[in-house]
Length: 282
Image (cartoon, rainbow, N blue to C red; front, side):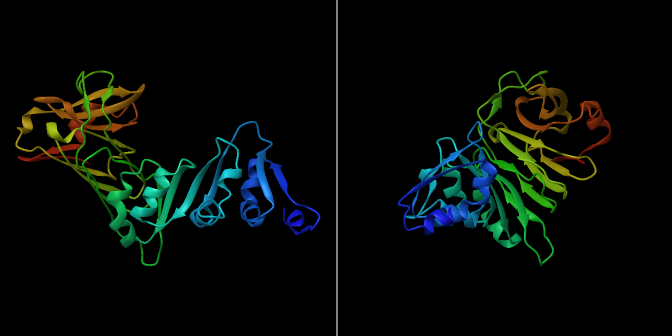
């Protein structure tokens, strides 16, 4: 591209290469003002992986080359700043498949509630120094989808509410949702999660919950602790544990992707403490 761009005899040129080749050369392609089209030698349009700095420089503004890529091309954006505005921009850009955030703990905590609304956000890396502190994630009134896979910092997650429910009840052997529940995927740093069992709180799903590492504190909201229930169930064919009250089986909390050996009976006998107003899964 640089040779053709610098050749005075060349008025315009196009590029055809593998996705890896295009991905590696994206900065050079952006600098080539004579470039008119980009094509792949791969069989399907891929998802390319670039940094947020490359996204901002190459795919936005008046010099963007986004229009030169084949239809169907998408991008995974790495190392975006923790910013509500940037998260919204990436979420709304059809070119963006997913994005991850790299920033300080303080900046992430300030933007966490807004980022929780961005379904394309999949990953967090905290800058140091200072050493990683607890990341505070406050849910919102709506379906929060947050993926902390690969994150090793401690998490403090306050789940809020949504309008999801389960028509057949959380005691059913297979669960299908009405509406969209909160979906939280935990990392490896240990999470302290607070939630409330209440018909107005909807459904909370928590993936990658590990006994002995993570802690789930459930406010019973005036309901008798004697009505608390846990049941083995499945979601899309995968074993899960549902937690709910006998008086409201349509709403509650689900620990998803649990090993089949981790049964509801085991949870009730070995990983649950119940007080007058709260229950704790540990």
